[in-house]
Length: 145
View 1 (cartoon, rainbow, N blue to C red):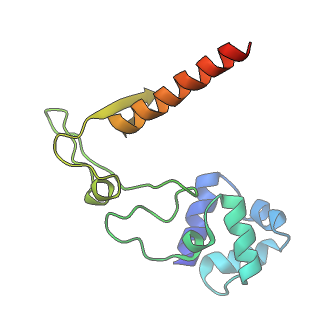
View 2 (cartoon, rainbow, N blue to C red):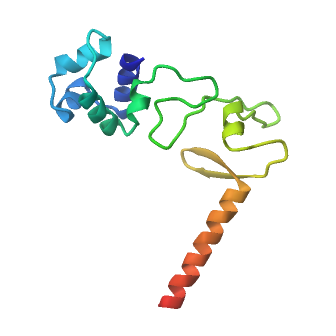
View 3 (cartoon, rainbow, N blue to C red):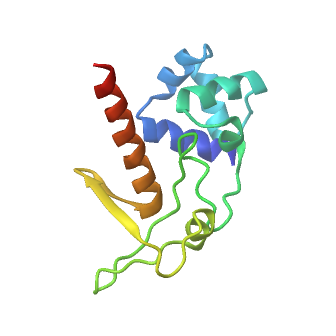
């Protein structure tokens, strides 16, 4: 629901109600009413809110996140699929929605990447394709130097 999304997004971004209200040129009280569900913003204010939070207008207003389809609160072009549990053997089950979206099946090779914040899995074919593009671009740039 919109009011829950507004509270969650504001909290995720670390904004106060006052800060968001200033960003979209309304009063803090008006914003507070949106978060409680007492009133709802007009479409133009929703567009501004979606822009501030970096989500689509549909994601902002969407109150239904179908099982396995990713959450509506992720930044535009990104998905949050939920959580998984690593078993005692270090294995995880990738959510069905992810497997379907990325055409993953048993035996699919994945590249495991990480930084100080976490771990990411990328289908090996996609990763290798991107690496090949980088190599070709670097070779082209070296030829032009």
